[in-house]
Length: 227
Image 1 (cartoon, rainbow, N blue to C red):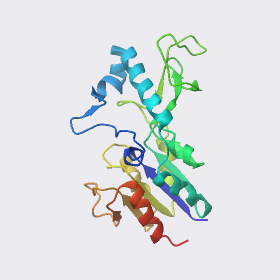
Image 2: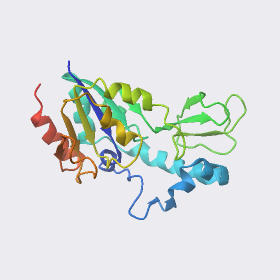
Image 3: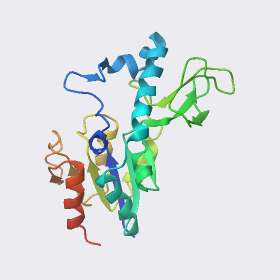
Image 4: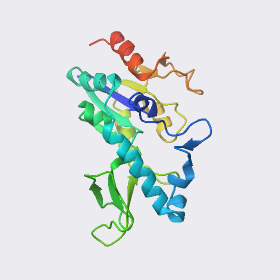
């Protein structure tokens, strides 16, 4: 089987009703992103950060995969698929994809503030002050915030370097280091970007652009596949 490596971003989840990371004003649900997605924000007001992610989890519980998610899952019948996602929701998993790598962490996980290797699956949407890890330290969302390292990046680079076909769905390619993954593709392999707007800076890299939202673009992409 050929290996199809897929990078997904907020655009694919947006069609399931989950808001994209920030709007035109640089706000996320009315908050400056640095207030709710940075170590400084956590140090300044951990209660605000916890409540912010509680509301994201509550929203994600009712969100369902859309056609783009399910089409990617169905392609596992014909390809060896590795999904690298910038999204923290679990919609790829809900759709049935079995190899999903979350670059920026997972919404339904918490981790120790003392030992970042202590990660816990969350059964509920609430995480509050006073919820402690086994070492007695406060739990925080297992999310990669601005200014923090991206532990899964080495895995993502290694997978991209093995791709026979590289597909990007629903991302503006403005957030690094994820946006740089395309540079690790093997020479000469097909590269396809599905997004309503052509990302700037990638127009001369021998890429096929499908200028559609994720659900429509995935249908177009599948029609072009040689299986």
